[in-house]
Amino acid sequence: VKLATFGGRLNGTLAVYQLEKANVLATDPANPGFSVAIGKARSRGVELDVNGQLPGRIEVLLSYAYTDAEARSRVRDPNFSFQILPGDPLINIPQHNANVQLAKHVTFGAREALLGVGLHYVGERNGQTGTDFTLPAHTLARVFGEVDLTPDTALFASVSNLFDAQW
Image (spheres, helix red, strand yellow):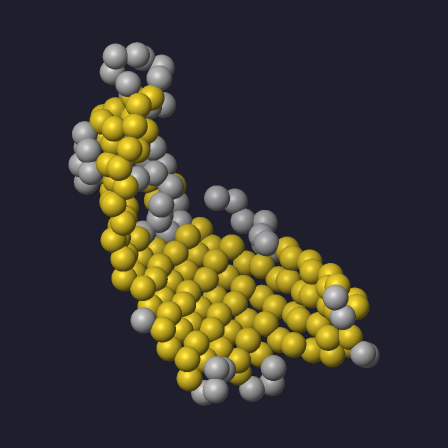
């Protein structure tokens, strides 16, 4: 579902999905150390994206995703030989992921520029197949800026982990 309102100053997208994947790599039981494409996986979830232009030449971006990604076959992990069962979560896919960003258009002399800040949240996620090991949730802050050098060229800079967070 898409929404555009206030003369295009507010836009949004809502997606509900389910994806089935076949031929996921799994250990070849006849040839240890090799893989064969026999596994299945499913991902389903909801994604919401909203962006808009506020008064004062300020842009806002909000996004959120809920993802349920799981194995659908009984196989062995090709790297560590752990048993993967139907319903086990896939590795490194958080259930919750969110992003918030604010940016302000400014003018420096005759040059147009954009200054912004953002936060990116990544939820806890499975760190190793076939185990209870999880990677912790983390939030990263960033700042960025862009300035037009010529009508066809812009200079962009970003600090993506502003507070040097460890995760």
